[in-house]
Image 1: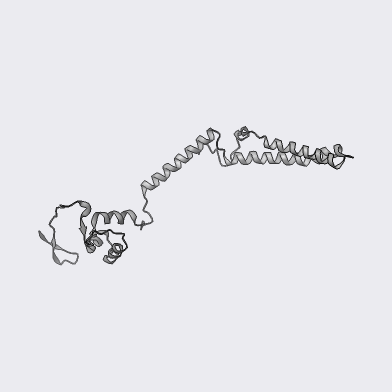
Image 2 (image 1 turned 90 degrees about the vertical axis):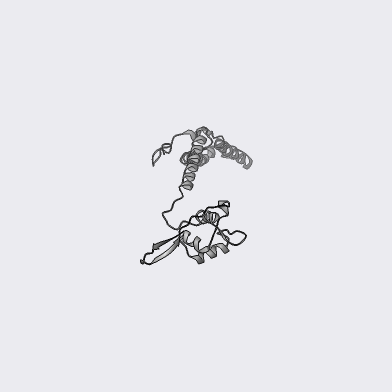
Length: 190
């Protein structure tokens, strides 16, 4: 069925408006490069190039497969507009982040993970304590070691240093349960 249509310039032309019934599977419907270029609003040359590089699939006769071509084009092309957002992808990323946060909170509750601020606070306190104790050794040991042999001095000093280091090694995980004042606010509420 043909109908007369006015184009933008006012010229009258004839268009084929007949409807075609699809008798083979819809995934096997083919189209021309010209029709595909109109449908995708790209040049016919670009359609030709995409068919050659395999971006747009063709059937055994070399005709473009319409449905698969549209799927490939709209599914694989990069977003041309900066404002385009794939909401499904964004939702998946958001859900993944929420899951990871929940896992971290659970690990904290099970005492398998600690906040970096608590670890830093406890380790700094332990290192400062060890430093103070090691710096106090000379004044503690000097009177005891006066007039002793090298072997006795070595043995006594080694014993005292090992005692201080064993205190460091005998830390308890309970030390990490301490609450540390948060400068930026409470981490748990965020």
